Amino acid sequence: MVSERDVRLRDGRRVRVYDTGVQNAAEGPAEGPTVLWHHGSPQTGAPLAPLLSAADRRGVRLVSYGRPSYGGSTPHPGRDVASAASDVAQIVDELGITRFAVMGASGGGPHALACAALLAGRVTGVVCLAGLAPLTDSFDWYAGMVSAGGLRAAVAGRKERERYAATEVFDVNSFTSADWAALAGTWASLGADAERAGAAGPDGLIDDDVAFVAPWGFDVTGIDAPVLCVQGGADRVVPPSHADWLVRNCPSSELWLRPRDGHVSVLDASPVAMDWLLARDERA
Image (cartoon, rainbow, N blue to C red; front, side, top):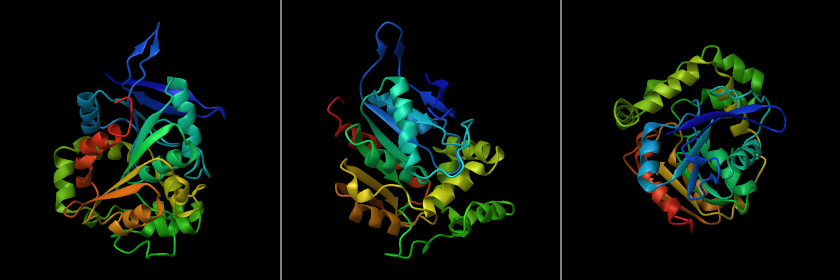
């Protein structure tokens, strides 16, 4: 069962939060293995069916939330990637959670890393599935992206990214045949959720893109928690070079390369990646 609530943050904003944890009025929330999911761009933050199933089979408490401007969460223009850590800290405090793991896919990957970097001692492990690396000149950051126009526009600032959004059209070649098969099958809930997020307007995606190409507000080399990067070798949205950079720069990290996977089909590794997280949580 998934509960849905709005959590009010210290600055007055509200974030939409989803939680599978069983709440007991007398004893408080159960303490056990918890995974906090960071959604991709664009999505609403509602938990996706395959993740719910994987968490349920493993006795994991799954928590997710909508970043600002997504899924009913209050906008926060000018946010950086690091701001996710402050929001998450307030969310887990509200839910009575002391320690937790984080998973993030695509645009959720950088925000998962932010939690590991800035909430040291609380994050037990990180899984980044097809996640972006910070913008850097140490490799060709855009190489291999079928459609990099939104990110390139974001480098010039929010107004330019807004102008690009006015005529932006998704390039179907961004997804491989394996991706389209995943969206027609196991990950149909992701496609439906992305459509809902897109129909609500582009603000969340615009703010994500601007944050991705600006300084993140933390250094991944300072992450103490173990990091797992799961990457599709055929990904045309976030190319393998991003995962390679992250693994080289996160101190305690490893790479699972799935050569035939694209940007969506790589999510099939989520259940096994959840096992990887549980192996690093003494409560599991």
